[in-house]
Image (cartoon, rainbow, N blue to C red; front, side):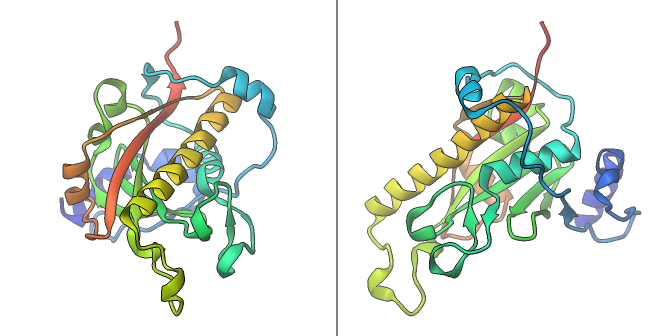
Length: 232
């Protein structure tokens, strides 16, 4: 899909992002990254109460998440929670082997797919169009947010320290599966604390990788669908 189509489709959802301070987009302009509101780091249920309420719910309302809720969700998932961590990188809300931070979050919204960049806390456009259905069937195709977990194996190579690089494919696999699980658990706890629901599941790895134009070193692992529960 052409970038102009991205702009035209984004116009329809501008009201939902108006409070983000994003300039108005008109036909012919290049789409801009979405700077998310500063994440709120208090409120919601306690950790123990969230653990009690944590569950997978597959019946999800298509209503969009407010910008502040989306911001809080992504920060809770894998945002920056301290300026300095191991190997000179900022610390994140989920652990990773040697602080590799090898998992990227590709966020599929109705108008397009965005890459979550944790340090500036923003969403950067990847591709225009509605790719939510690539995450799975049923409510996954209509839920407001689908997070695709993508590993970048290149981050296991430590510059200037080849002896410390993580090169064994089986070791890499164990690390990135654990890292994905830690982030997904953060999402589950956040949604339980905020009255949202989540569903962690498999996805269309082959077509998603092609459509997101991933590099050979990147692999699609899983997806997680988030939204409001359907009222009984």
